[in-house]
Length: 457
Image (cartoon, rainbow, N blue to C red; front, side, top):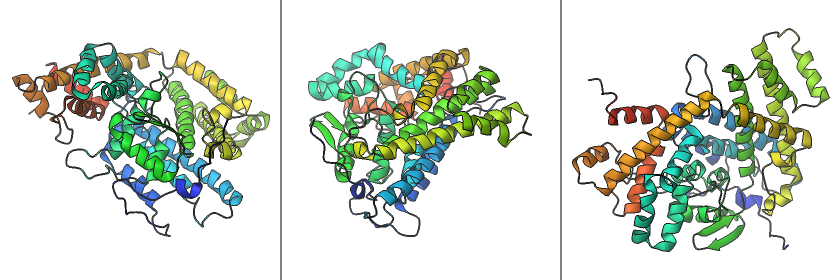
């Protein structure tokens, strides 16, 4: 196998912004460009909407569990720690690097972590599945031939792959880069490094190997190519709509932070909701720790007898242990990562104790948490709501002159290109509208459209 020319940190860390080709600036002692990315995301409307989007469990009643917003904040915290820890090691390893080159790794990772779920539709991962199956199995199948007749077979193939394998990660990249109606070029005008770090699957849907995960839609393919080429990210395939790059190295940390938080925090939430017992929770989490770390659990806080507090402390120790192991894997494999050769996640390369404990948690969660009645009820409701909204709004853009269609279309914000000249662009406008909804908004709109509730005047 021919070794790839490795990527270079001095190119991978860039303050250039999409939509502003002349915006490249040097690092200063003031708020950095990457801190601006972080702040821009924190104050954005899509980020605020995450507070009403399901993570796994139903939005809280008497017991507070994670939603997409709290999950994203926790992922950003873990990601920042890993980026900062790795920066300290890389700075010593590369004394020849420009001063301050690695100083912002933690900030870049934390900003990308904030954005990683921005593109998720309502009702968690079931929302993604509902969209995909509407077109692959439901009434949306008729769109395949219509798109082919309008766009031609080659272009239609990738559009159809995008839709039938609909992915929230790809939609996050679209949300940040697409110029919606009335908005500025470059979308949120993020730095290239932050944008590249968000993309965990840096290939188009045609190269997803039959899996649902991919990094960008057809419509944003030129933007990703621009970002990746500027940063010097290795290109493995550049054949028309078939585009595949190596990951930006910091995407490994974004993935790891996400994996750590959803796996460990979902277990804690399941415990809070009495889906699993304290004993089951403790056993799952203790598997991550060695004998010395286990002893610390029992000796550090001998006076803490509250069962909930002991679970919280154990959870924090576990997250710290996994985080440190991910930093070790990353820095030990720096050369492979820079050559685009490290397959799988950082956790998949962790020492056996942590890797096996993580796999055990994943297996347990699938059987006992993700298939629990509470979670399944959300998924079933989400399927019905999204399927209904898609059916009605796609019918409306096919027959926009009908009286009912006009009323539905009038409900859509002007930023979504639902009146675009091309049919497939109008379809993407519908998807932009529906995926931007919160769970509460989607449910409320569904009830109103179905005549189950009326606005209070």
